[in-house]
Length: 260
Image 1 (cartoon, rainbow, N blue to C red):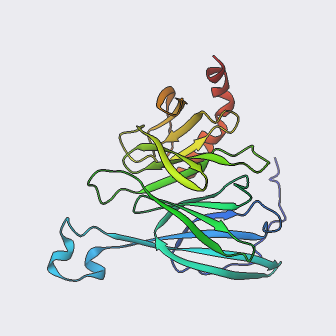
Image 2: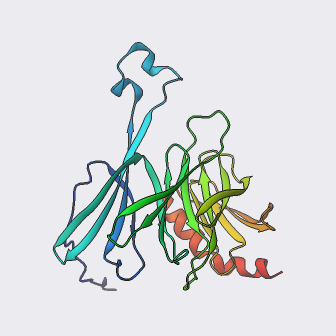
């Protein structure tokens, strides 16, 4: 069987200096040629602070990154519109619908923060809020994955939910109302890092989460107060991208469970 050939080609590339681990196109007209890119780098304490105390437990590795905003001007020209220095970025998602007529971008960062940005009419990102995940005394809590409950929304809405997974294996459910973020509930979904989480866009009371190498889970939340585990399955994969594909394409199999 002959392999199919494609006409895809690289038309432009850019050196982001740090590891580029998240990239998202803006879904709204007239900004569909705009993309956000997040970067990540670990700087060990003894590299930035060569003192004898630098390797102690009280001096964890630092994670820093940048948020870039690019605009495609032509088939061979990419314009860097904005650069924002931030802690390391693990994930980003544009909201699928305008919130109170605003275009919003959610960012998950290494210090366990959920950041919300607005894209204004001049193609600049303005920070609206910063929410810290709760993780006790652990300074190494990371926000790993993020999703909006607006996957099938087309019209402007007033309030939505966001879900954020973290390095403690928790799933954190937030409400965005009046452009303010509040924690609805937090659930211990896994014993290790929860690398991926996503809403079921056909039934946004259902949330998927997964940890690398081990399990994927499907949860339903009731009255925004508690979670019920619908299904748990072993995932034979060591690639987070494959795990994400599995989670996002298993919705049809879960639909009968949701309708019971």
